[in-house]
Image 1 (tube, rainbow, N blue to C red):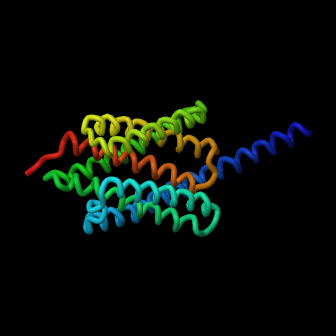
Image 2 (cartoon, helix red, strand yellow):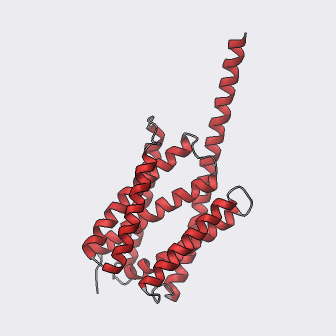
Image 3 (cartoon, one colour):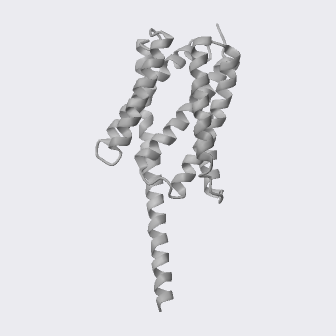
Length: 231
C-alpha cells in the first residue's frame, strides 16, 4: 500500500515538475520575442541619431560596461517582482542602442541591409538548431557552465584590449570565437531550463537574450568583414 502511494506521489510530483519547466520555457520564449521590439527601437534610434558613433572608443566601453552591469544587477534584484519585465525590456533597449555603432558601420556598405538580414536569419537558424538539440540530448550539461564562464571572461578581456589595439585579424578571430562560445551558451541555457535548473523565466530570458545578441553581433561582424561591398 505504501509503495503504491509512493508511486502515485512520485508520478504526481514529476507531472508538476514537468508542467513548471514547460511554463518557464513558454514564458521565456514569449518574453524573448517581446524583447526584440525595444532592441530594434534602440538600434533604430542609435543609427538615426548617431549618438554612439560620436562617442570615442573609451567612452563607448565605459557606457557599455557600466550600463550593462547596472541593468543586469537590477534585473537580478527585480526578477521576482512586477518590475522585472520592464527592467529587462529597458536593458534590451539599451543593448539595441549599443549595437547601433556596428549596424551603422555595416549599413555603410552597399549591401549592408542584406548583410543584416543574413545575420538575423543565421542567428535564428542557430537558435532553432540549439533548441532542437537541447531537447534530444539526455546528458547533463551543467558541468559546461564553469568552462563557458571562464571562456566568456577571457573573451571579454581580449575584446577590451583589441578595442585599443584595433587589430582586424584579432577582431576576426575573436568574432569567430564569440560565435562559437555563445552558441554553446545557447545550448547550455536552454538545457538548464528543460532540466529544471532555471526556474525564473526573467533570468532565463536574460541569459538567452545575451546568447542571441552576441551570436548576432559576431556573425554580423564576420559578414561585414568578409562580404561588405563598397559602392
